[in-house]
Length: 210
Image (cartoon, rainbow, N blue to C red; front, side, top):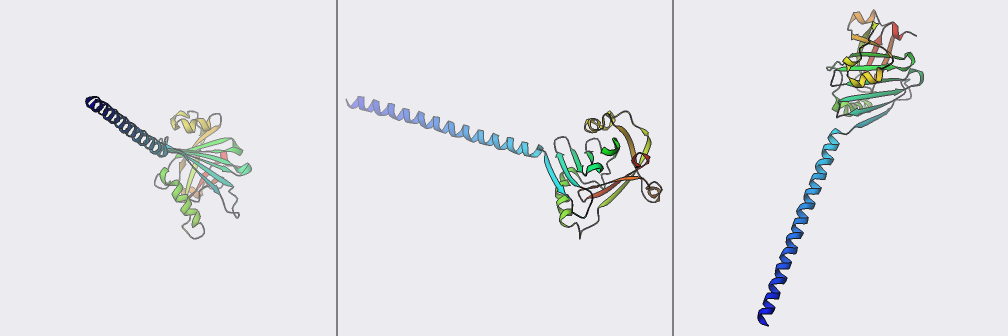
């Protein structure tokens, strides 16, 4: 009987050891699942889109703006809702091109991004909030001026798919940045856009005439 009790105790102890091993295995598995979940969250956060919603001050006529930032494709999409003067811009940081669709003209204007002036994609939200908070006391927005070439551009594929998709079916023109006195000669007919208190862009040429 004593030997029988000893064997029973050993079996019980062996069973408990197995149970503990199973528990430890489940704990390690749970930690791995949580860790993988956190990695997925971090990876998702780093490539997720973000939005900046802007309502301009009541003393301006620029309407409201909404900027959608696609970090995965390095593209910013700027929508300005201002009735007949509404416009939409795409800044493609991969190709280095920007395009503005002027709704009233059913026209797209494409130009190079001036990377010395245009904020980096990851800085857009931060800089826009800082500039809005100091809109009456801070520095004046940067100004860029472009002369629109008179010849219509047919090949949109050279500008990348985001701009191609926005401008498809619209009259599209390229514009070149101008500086100094050469700008004022062409400044009579311009379409002007203001982006997030950060910069003002003038697109000048006959296609923007009223």
